[in-house]
Image (cartoon, rainbow, N blue to C red; front, side, top):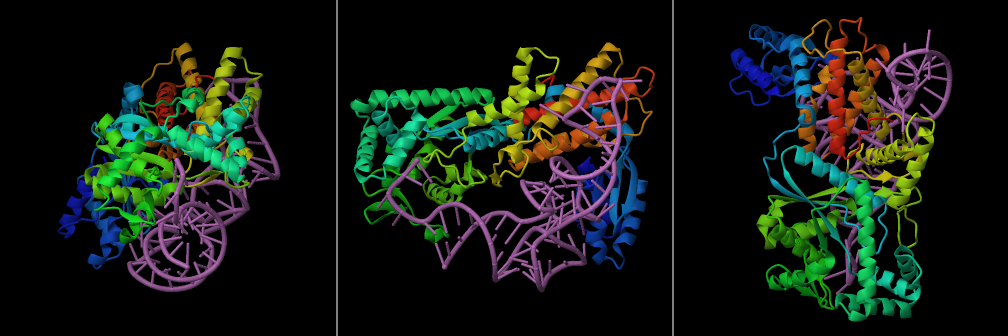
Length: 554
RNA sequence: GCUCCCGUAGUUUAAUGGAUAGAACAGAAGACUUCUAAUCUUCUAAUGCAGGUUCGAUUCCUGCCGGGGGCACCA
């Protein structure tokens, strides 16, 4: 529709004397009261005529009226010369019929046209806690994956995990000292104890042994890694996320080093015993790729990872989702990758999200100042359990609903804002069950389902073509869902969906409060039920894209 | 010091260069014999400062102020 309107306006501009109108935009106005589509052409082109933008608008509208599209019911001029278009109710009811017919697939697009895409996100480190920062990365990465999948991409999910390095050595050292400690505690013990130079030396020794796969530590190390990974899997299951590929740092070092050495002359240089990449030439900074002990750093491993990923899954696009603290690091590595493998670099996109911070400052697993994902979900779940305790539900239902609502509340709080921004995580402030929250959307969805159930009981038919009422704002929002999905995909920004669903849910809840939907004596009832069905579908599909469960009762 | 990102009601935040800056929470007042009140209705309240570009700036540019990240052998 947008395209048709744009073409028409361009034609009209040619008619009134603009040879080559290149600056024509048609958008949804910010406020539904201005109509469904709006164009600012009169403001843009008024300078080229000796007339006010309002007069030009008048002239254009009189031309537009002559060739009015059947889907457009009304054309108006408002403000300083905006031309506003309102959609005909027949068009809207047809759209609603389409939504109900498509169901689960409503909103799908094919803008990515089966593009092979690998998305890396979450990246927790074995031997350390899976904390709320990982939860943030996972929530955003999973939502992005789902959104681009819905837009036609062929997605593989990947997780890259640091199973070697000093943090592992610290944990192993702690475990050797205190075999009864959990791995998280063992890590904290190692981290604190390393202040002692003698212990630090022991940890470095352990680190070296792990790199060399020393048999004396092999068993303990393997046990710890396995335990961590199994625990991560439990969390992934609860978050309804999964990975197709797992990559480990222990597998990326060797070849990474070789790569750097191969390109040593051309791209890298020796400096103070290390092999570095001088980023200054490109407005970046210098980073070490091979340290003076001859070991590959994270930078070198990252280069290798790009290759390994491509070997596993020959991608058209590789998306890496991380927190924004590594932005500058990533630019340098990307530049080096570009000089070595320009084709891979071109396909690689870094998407960074904000950091989850505590009001007291940065989280640190070293000092034990972390909130684990598990404890957060558990605590939220407890609060919800209290809320559902007096509902007429079975214990099993209560348990399931509490879990779903807890996950929904947490994920929503992460996805409701532009993903680049930090979240200062304050339990009471950040997690809400009311208003702009996950449970609000979930509740609205169950409400719609409950209406539909009643309609079924009372045998109210659904009739989309009944034109006894003027279209409400609900319908005028419903047809936009695919556009929202598309934009969220193009910009890798799930929060457009969040904002949209919130607006839709708000309209539906007002509608629900004002009008009785299921009413066999009301001739409009079938139409209202039809709208309710469409709302339920869009909420369900939208929540699925965000990775937020949509319970049927709550 | 260099560099990147960010400053919107009391708080958390939205706004492809457009119209009266949109929500939510908190605060004040109201609405359940009704399809689930995790809801709805009404009110109070915001673009850090100073310039510039533009018909039009929260958005783009410059400077300042404030906050955060990064800047050599950690990951």
